Image 1 (cartoon, rainbow, N blue to C red):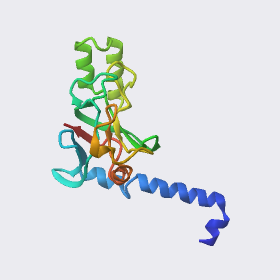
Image 2 (image 1 turned 135 degrees about the vertical axis):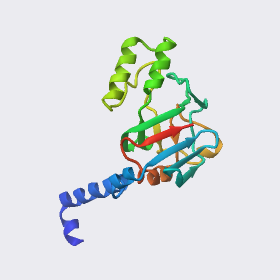
Image 3 (image 1 turned 30 degrees about the vertical axis):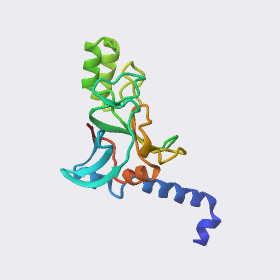
Image 4 (image 1 turned 120 degrees about the vertical axis):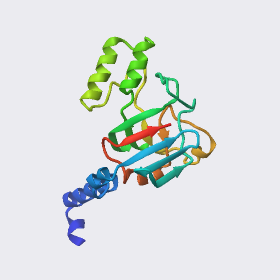
Length: 193
């Protein structure tokens, strides 16, 4: 213990390693192998972590987009997209404490957007290519983007009890997102219904 205090570089390295342990589960491959996934119930305002069909963790009083949820999300509508997604980004530090990004827009969203002439053929193709390459799809199209699960950051955690406040994301308290972070991994299934 004394040696760590006397060596600032080693101390910083230990601090970084400990923070990574807080973000990632002890054995993320074991979590993946157990079919762990997330279900967001936008009507009940509940986020659950499931293993197969068994609920392992439940977070209540979550917030969604201030305008509700929809199958037909577009940029700026303040609605949370419904559908079947995958986690494509895990940010252990963000304005909203932690951010877990999903792969919105999906192929189904792009097809809907193309049929409705909301996006161009080039935007449609770019979304398809990103999904095929398992990278983050374009986030700046008329369909919107930057959707995920996050904390409150420096905001008031009681806001979840009073109203939906996000621009389309799913929000938990900082304590809830810290706990959820123990379960997540890139590629994890996220169902929003």
